[in-house]
Length: 356
Ligand SMILES: Cc1cc2nc3c(=O)[nH]c(=O)nc-3n(C[C@H](O)[C@H](O)[C@H](O)COP(=O)(O)OP(=O)(O)OC[C@H]3O[C@@H](n4cnc5c(N)ncnc54)[C@H](O)[C@@H]3O)c2cc1C
Image (cartoon, rainbow, N blue to C red):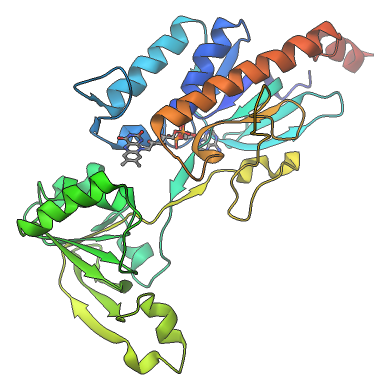
């Protein structure tokens, strides 16, 4: 082991979201000595939500942070270690093991790695966004909604997250507006029904075929108003860019005190570039999938993927936990086979070779 390496582990897991912690529980119980690295969002996305109503086994629901804390306790009870830190780079060494470098300069080696690094909230890239993020603009209603009590609030998006956030924000807002670039929502029926009930009661108003193009305000005073564009056929910014339809787009200022983006996520896979792992066009990890074992194999020997960093479609707590379990079982099989073949990384042998 080279001097700068803190420690060698059989298995390193990137991420303490529900996928990483489930992988940690299984891996610890299989004596694979996992080290789970927290990343910049310890506990993952579930720590941003108050009530999880659809995780099996909790008929009354459970708070996201409580569910995550329970899982962390369960993983550490069986011997998993967790540590603060963000993985900056993973690379495959000639001997077949991995080198895992953290942004704080620490490095580890590991025989196998599970990427359970989730996905981060997407932003629009409109003027005012960088300046006002955290000063009226947020990607997490459950975290920040209460700061804007009594204000009119705008949620941007048309999927489950947008509906959930808009419904949650009615607790605090004067009126919640949902700006969606099309006529139809992509959300589950249950969320659309709940939203329509609040539309009927006047708590939520829909701004369909509408997009946000600018946010106005200052960090000192927060958001003053936004600029919206609307076209009856939807996707108004595309129509605005086309000289043939630009005149048909209505542009107007709209007063709101807070804006919440709920427009999807970007998978956290940059730190895996050095492994040459395959990703799709949006950066989601591509895994074997299909039937039988090894479904979480990424195609890089010993590197497995689990949760929202792979799954662009379901993105649920229970599916992420399920994939975390699969990844730990796949990693166990891989480690067992390498051990049987005498191919696990031998720290002492490497140190002795370095001394010669
Ligand atoms: C507001 C909100 C409410 C939700 N409510 C529900 C719900 O009620 N029911 C439901 O089923 N689902 C819900 N979801 C979705 C659910 O939270 C996700 O599907 C689930 O958290 C995905 O788990 P994960 O472990 O794959 O990823 P994440 O939860 O995203 O965790 C990723 C982890 O990876 C870490 N990480 C990232 N990059 C690195 C790095 N470079 N190095 C090390 N670690 C890294 C992060 O710090 C984090 O710990 C909700 C999501 C949100 C945002």
